[in-house]
View (cartoon, rainbow, N blue to C red):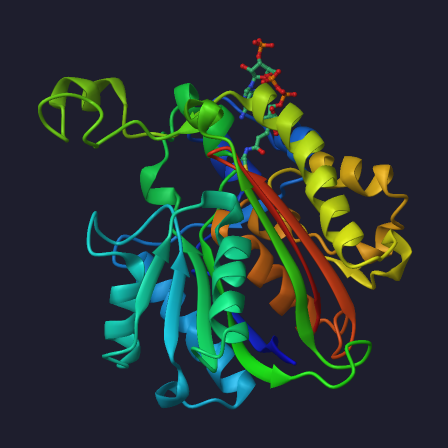
Length: 336
Ligand SMILES: CC(C)(COP(=O)(O)OP(=O)(O)OC[C@H]1O[C@@H](n2cnc3c(N)ncnc32)[C@H](O)[C@@H]1OP(=O)(O)O)[C@@H](O)C(=O)NCCC(=O)NCCS
């Protein structure tokens, strides 16, 4: 049976390290508050000359090199982001231009923190159907250029970092599902009832006669707004639910999974999910301490770090789950 295999991963973050104490000099916050509430210790923020596609391309190049795949073999590019270089065209087109692989389809996914699992799900369908053989997926964000760095925006601003993570997916004729690397299943959901609980209002066609409303700009309608408590409450309900959905679909128990690579929004959210499933600490791979929430990039960054640190080896069974703006939530189980 034809399934999708993750051939290799790659990641890239900008050079500029921003510690929690650095944020205290911009706004009324503290290292203690941020660590206690979220687990975050630091993040990387890009400089003015770097765009999201620059980070994405670096991650893609590393993934291609690690996979020993030439860019000419790629049949499709999928880029997940909520911080594209420009309003249009999408990030995937700029990644394509910089990688130099014209002609193949380039698709943007706008599912925020679940964007990477949505991308995996879409890529998996194209590969299972036999349409494509190799797909490059990248999740990339530059949040730092869109955050309110005053005390007004502190509840959101301290949470986010910049970065990119990529994987190369390839068609694989799976003979032994218990041994061969492949995606077992993906599960994707959304409920737009909660679209305004975590969003950037504008610029956009939903705000009046002009996409850019200069009065609203002064009020900061271009900064993310979040109902943190609502996000937290829904995240700790939906992540376990969608993880269980994936386990049930594959007739697996939590203890069958070798490594959990969850989305990185808040260490407390992941601890609560792990507790519900009695997952031992050493089986949950968190990176939020180092990179904060890089939205669409958290899971591929986690996979790449896990591979490089020796925590994730070929043949291991991995489960991922994510929750985010939309609200959207998703899970995947795959043998790496
Ligand atoms: C954002 C979050 C960490 C806030 O934690 P919390 O324990 O709910 O904190 P609260 O919102 O109750 O705020 C507590 C106090 O800290 C203050 N505060 C908010 N941000 C702060 C910051 N960065 N530094 C210091 N104080 C801050 C609040 O103003 C509030 O003060 P008050 O009690 O005087 O009103 C938490 O709600 C969360 O993680 N939510 C989910 C966020 C998320 O996952 N987002 C991404 C989605 S993928």
